[in-house]
Length: 269
Ligand code: NI
Image (cartoon, rainbow, N blue to C red; front, top):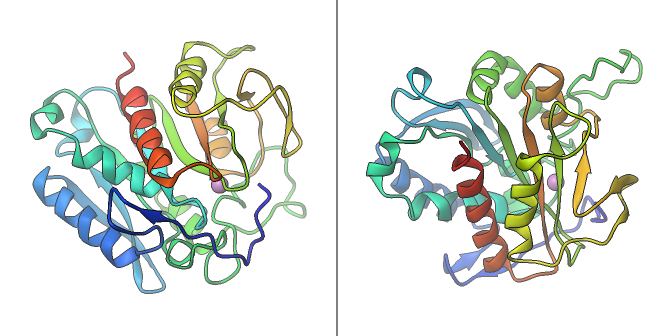
């Protein structure tokens, strides 16, 4: 992360014919997809004037693998939420007899609407999730969005039992990479498949350090902090990926890459 918390990052999308922070258009198109695909949607809480949605396919809890997709924790990383919308808009309703959908499409709506990283209250929605190694005195406070996720933890843990994908962006980067978590010492097929999907769209970051984390072959492996992905893994889920598309590349390409990452994530056996 190199972005300034107060700076606005806004791009134009030719795919959606609007600016990346056009939140009214985002919710309008999302609602249309929820209706077309006959999905269930639930408002976990209201953040400012906006809903924080959890979306799932009908009877999702009763069948098959439970995998959760999330995006929009950081407001200056719009290709995740738009990527989810792009994925949904390409999905045939008949596909839903074979796959479950569990989606947090836009966690930080007030940040998204301004193209700024933090929410309207200056909080980072992807920090403040307690890690076992943190004492109360060193733990950061959860944000408004974070508190809503923690209040719905049973739902979100059940929805991510077989995997969690959270779509982020590195707005100052020209190369892609992933943070992944697996219950083994080396990256396995889960990590490599998602890294390889990203590599179809962008060059992968060179080996070295990113944000103080060791990156090898485009993968930062089993890095624990107070993020939501790290917290879910500490809570017992075994597979998680935080993807980072590069903000210096074309927005529509980043949107397509996120849609493809979602397909790859859901398509796993
Ligand atoms: Ni981020």
